[in-house]
Length: 432
Image (tube, rainbow, N blue to C red; front, side, top):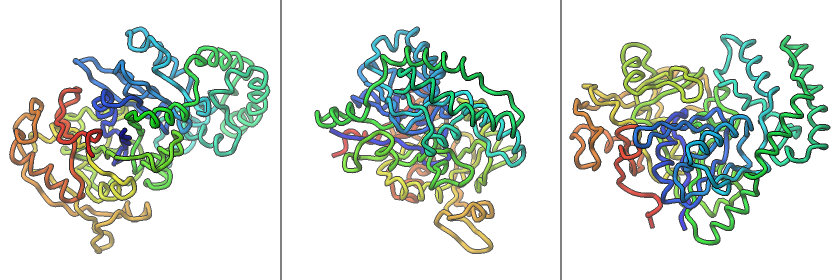
């Protein structure tokens, strides 16, 4: 039995979906433990692209069972849309391959409306959320007034709950934001229909995990977003509403910390960010445009262009500490082909002082000037390379430099978006 946690080591969008898809055949279960449909994981198999927002990325492998844990917030309309699309493709004929925790909280229309209204009102002070209702849903969860997936099948109690909550939500929407109210009786009917359709997929996912671990099964935990979007450890307030780090897998899925074996930190070979907040290595000119164009850096969920810059090792070292990362997956190395020089930020200079550790406050991050070590680039196309030894010399040196700076080995190197465009140097499920 081996358990592996796959987490983003940057600001999300690191290519976690591809790596989870690659690892899934080695896992009996793939479990999502936090976030919502603000995360889009893109899989490319035999040239066909699949974008998943709620369903775990192991679903394309017929031998895996995929779990949506209690730490996830679920938009039933989005989840059912993904289920329908997968069923039409013949991927999800058996409901037992996808299990949704009855304890997961539900994203409702007023969550989405409030998310949009707040962002619109904030204007230049907006956080750059995806406006999918994630934050407001987590707010209600913490305030103990949320609706959970299991509630959707208890129709009488559900109707009473929704009518009570609607008073508060519609007051805020209409009186403060001057937005239209949510029609609660129509919502009750919609929720009952959601419950009817989701009931075949509902389960106690924590018990499924426990039984699998007792039986010696391999389990892969799939994180969403990234370390620096974590509500506690990220660049607050420009963060998401959940804990994205490896430690969150225990609360968000229902397993104890003694059952976690390996933590795979997923990073791009450069750095990207969506939305507001400081970004020390950001390149706003032609270099940033080149990285964005070559890397097709546009959000899988919103289509927004991502901000791009050079690899920030100060961030990566912090991710290693916070997550307990045991190995890295270095994605999109192919995008750096064609750059004659490839800078790597090894430290920051803040108010004239050198800092090798990530600052504690947002203000310090905003004032941080990157200190670069410039590596020689390469011009060769690496998309066809399948072994580390066959990479161009300078590409190998770049990977080795990153490994030395963060003191963690790169188990995977991605040289293209396809499942097979991956160099595997060490399978975490096979590490003793």
